[in-house]
View 1 (tube, rainbow over the protein chains, first blue to last red):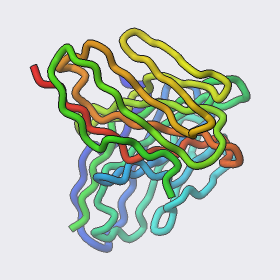
View 2 (view 1 turned 180 degrees about the vertical axis):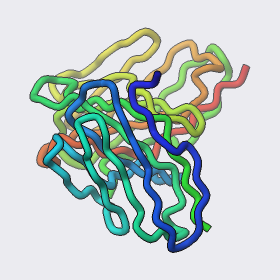
View 3 (view 1 turned 90 degrees about the horizontal axis):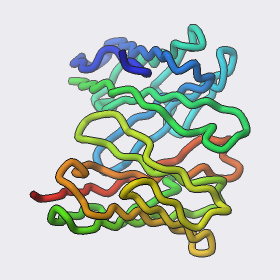
Length: 116
Length: 112
């Protein structure tokens, strides 16, 4: 099984629908992240969580919300999806802490979302 | 705004040749990392270089870091068709809370 599992892998939905993308990890990492990838723009950080009680906005959080249900689970919601949220979404984890390599990311395989 | 900017945007070479990708960034960093992404899949960490290091090797990969020029390069030697992928640099900048900021990536195509 993958260290970081995202579901669903592909989803097509309509404008205005609520969508949840789920992420679970077996790495035992404290830190979890949601990124969005658009062609030519690299990855942009949506939300991140450094532990279960810690949720922080990234650079593009508008229109998104998250829930950290447990150390191993971090879900991303689009309350009312719009077409410009069509993108490839990645969940990632990192160990955290002060040692070198603490913020090396382990990525899931991605969730491709299409909003019509 | 993106911290890292890769150059070139795309690179096409023959198998066996070396591939060099460059990354420039704007502010002081703790470390810089390189990741690879095969088409439509998750990114995979390749190598991390700390701000006090100038060069690092891992197999066929060689990474350099010049903090005075705020730039890094990734060299892949003796490239293989399996190296075809997108390559991203990511910076851990001071004052950014230990989070990574990714550049737009370089698309590498290795022709066999």
